[in-house]
Length: 215
Image (cartoon, rainbow, N blue to C red; front, side, top):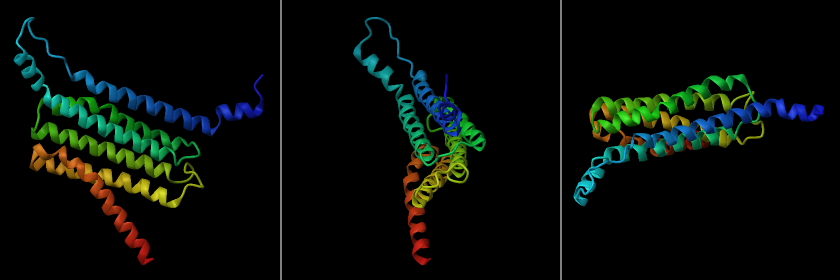
């Protein structure tokens, strides 16, 4: 027979938060694995010369580049998701919408990765890729806003950590927005512009420090 205290632990707010985190981790794991599906091993006639195999592999270069970029992009989103949820202490139904929207955005990444990889340096595919990351960034920031506010946030979470988490989310939006704009002007540099995210994060951190110093 289950005691009252055991029942509370198994079905209380903490249990709801754990289920949300486990489900999210599973989605991230599946999506990041699906990226490799579009990398089809070349099949050449038996006895083909070595040069033909190297050429066939070289033709897959855009796909490999897309895989590497998206693998780390999704990995960074998962890291951010983990870091954000570590600030949560209480479960709330308010978490459902932003978390599901973020997972939906992440789940579509294999398609946009394949689209951009099949059409390297082309304006529309690269723009769609970067713009979709912007959508994911907005959903991510929405989730951060809910997690770092009552009633979800841990009352004992350091205020600096909360502000840093929010800055990271804002930096992702600014970085993906930069990449989206660059993709329209110089498509070949669109995905590279995602590297501006750390720069935006540093800028936001410095601005926050200056504001704190003035106060």
